Amino acid sequence: MLNKEKIASFNESYLATHKQNLNFLGENLSKKNLDLNNVINKLSDFQIAIPSWALGTGGTRFGRFPLGGEPNTLEEKIKDVGLLHALNRSSGAISLHIPWDIPEDYKKMKSLAHELDINFDAVNSNTFQDQSGGTHSYKFGSLSHIDKAVRKKAIQHNKEVIDHGVKLGSKALTVWLADGTSFAGQQSFRGAFQRTLESLQDIYAHLPADWKLLIEYKPYEPNFYSMVIPDWGTSHLISSELGEQATTLVDLGHHLPNTNIEQIVAILMHLNKLGGFHFNESKYGDDDLTVGSLKPYQLFLIFCELVQGMEETSNPDLSWMIDASHNLKDPMEDLLQSVETIKIAFAKALLVDYNELKTFQQKNDVAACQSMLQDAFRTDVRALVVESYYASGGVIDPLKAYRELKIRQKLIEARGVDSKSTGL
Ligand code: PSV
Ligand code: MN
Image 1 (tube, rainbow, N blue to C red):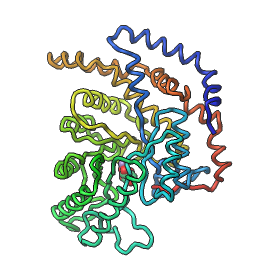
Image 2: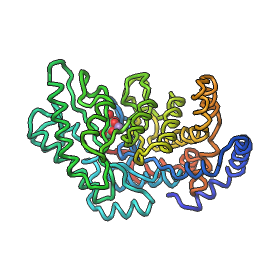
Image 3: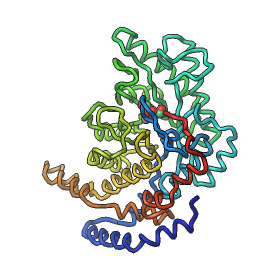
Image 4: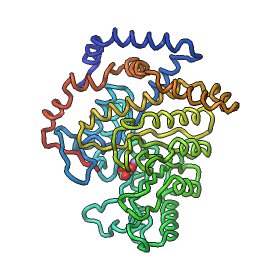
């Protein structure tokens, strides 16, 4: 659907304006002590994984309004990520969710992904739903369940997810638990915590030596009184007990309103225990809105901590992923917007001279500290992000190209209007 010629002919119409924008920005930034090429290279290298469940419409407990052409096999999901990656050269990985994405032919999926320059990112287990034909139910929990047989089943599932991932070349397992209670007294907090820890220890023992275990947290939903891993502190506690390969994964939507997420990021990196990110936007809870669509300054502040943490701590390499699910927008368009927004926040954070910031912090010059950050945030860095697409062989405006090249229409023609994706 997309080849070098199509990309080149699209770029032709936009190249002159883009180069003008880039030169203008370069001149403005030349007064700063900044290596612009270094920033562009960092942006080009920055890859954000696409979750398999974000490629179709979803994200609602109520009506779902599929828009047609959705991928309904793993092969089609990989191809869709391939399309995104061909456009922006920034989405070179897919994150699979088991059992939705169990490959029938591992070799075939691997070679397809390889052809499209796609890696397999973290694999995700699912113990928040019962699969048909199952004997034990997750209705009252999985890794924390009071019944050992249910825990065993959930542990086994996670081990199998690792095994699928190994065959594909993944290097991480992400665990998000729906376990918790909706009524006070329903369960012992201490008992549920201890059982979860022991279950995760069992899973951890199955982890290959070069793998990471990423542990998510979430304050509420689907349980509304208590979640077994409600916050980063609990996730960190568990990951510390497990060992070096276990880390905390920050999902932006999994915080109560106004939580200072950038501070969480800073402290976890200081402890070398931040494993990765799920990008999305939250207004009230786990809303799965588009990252940066409401609070771009917060996203920028998070990236300021990430940039400093990556320079100044020994925190392991991070897994970057979008975790959203859309019902109103074409999910592919949303993913292009999301990647762009993430890269813009990263680019802005790379403009800050953190040594200078430290000298102001040393003097308690609060106004100067604030100005430094805001100056970077207010800089229009879009030309840098566009250059990172273009220089890597992508298109100058991925969203525009997606529309001009009528990609959704072509997907509908190929897969039909009723083609629905599995997922959330
Ligand atoms: C549910 O809250 C959730 O959004 C978690 O963040 C997981 O990462 C994702 O679903 C996939 O299971
Ligand atoms: Mn998540």
